[in-house]
Image (tube, rainbow, N blue to C red; front, side, top):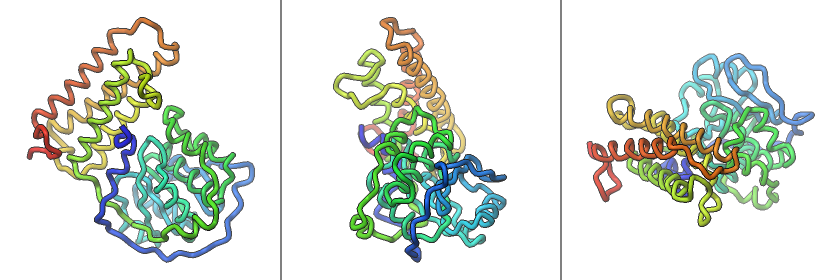
Length: 326
């Protein structure tokens, strides 16, 4: 199960498109007075200021948003999104990219260390973003900032709240809650080589991870639509939330042409909608403290989601192999 909940891990590959950025040691700025605060920006959504060196927000999606980053004095951009960043447009505005993708389940240890090192040595201000700037980027910014001493641990969760991070992303909130400053020796020993892009994972690997996510939902179903006794780490609504996010991220960030049109694209869209409905049902059941009676919609939605996967597999997956048929 761990593989699915580390969505971004599939984005890492032995083959890197890398850029070694010039590192510059700077004295750690003080956190924003009163804690993290929202930034008033015109083109950057969900922007939050953590310190005078560090900000978090949504992806800069056009020339105007990159220009606004330049106006804010930003020198380096860290993206934790799975999609390939717009490195060329960033360079036009004197901005450098660092790509450290994470998933919606939390900030893994290795990525957290890389984030902390980047925040410590790269010239600021630094802007951290994901796609919408509401979930992954504030969590990544908060964790990295705590680890490298830019923000005190007690302010970490407030970063997520200021950005509007959904409390349903329990892994992201947990990462912020448990983050503690690293000792200088550990931080100094961490590599200071940063990659401006990382490859998109092969579609076959992505599909395998999605299968494992569905397996988690199956475990929840078999336990009467609540946390399985043998998997106490599985929170039912969270399992479904991560699954629909996986459908959405696959359609958005994948480099396979079949994702743009035709049956494959339609199955991903339908799968996202069904998994999202499953999350709604599971959340309502959890809030009602798991009543004995289970509405029929639980089974019908699960069956529709299972059929969605099966129909796609019949056409695109060669049984028993981690490959997709053309």
